[in-house]
Length: 264
Image (cartoon, rainbow, N blue to C red; front, side, top):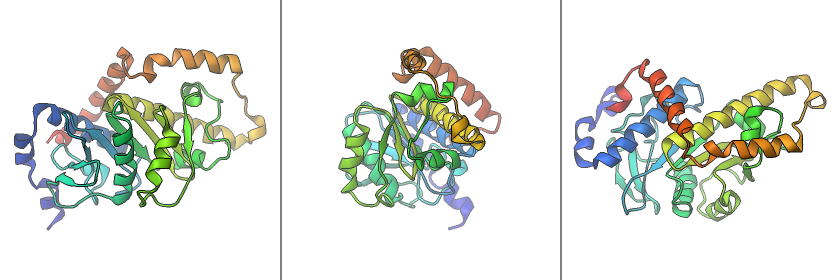
């Protein structure tokens, strides 16, 4: 099957067979993928964003294995349940096992997180490889410093046995740094999870740039400032503040200037 036919398969039928609520989530998740491509957060065909399908079933949407992030559309996302059964695979490409292991574990254990986003960016992976992890050296970082948790690297996430430890390390947080691996954020919506990831990625960018002058030269924020920003950031961290929607709306305006085919 050619690349053109792969990308165009079933675009006219998926919307007809899913609920309006699911279609809305599909469009938002596809937008998140395209934004990640626009911001160069991708790792070729690897890493994954997922979103829970509205309704009583434990189904979530994730990218088809083999597509680049800038090829994701609302119609070509794969629907899978938390046990790994593929419910709807419009392109017949299946999904990446590592993506399933990580995302299904969180969707099963944390029904409050409707979206889970995971990246392998250069600066995110670099911070994940540092012994002290995220440092309280920027305003961006302070929004996450008191909330971030860590999961130790165990190899490529192909074993279901790792899921229990991943979930235990996540606990009730929605900000996870996977050691020697990358970043992960969850949210009550795609908009919320993306706002968290956007800020966390920026914090890592700043940290790596600041460390160019040596760690001894870094100025850490005071405990009082850390505590203050922790309180101030709650208007974003719960995903319910109006700032989340304003942030997302601005992102969509930016994305739509690139094209609207992600909505197909």
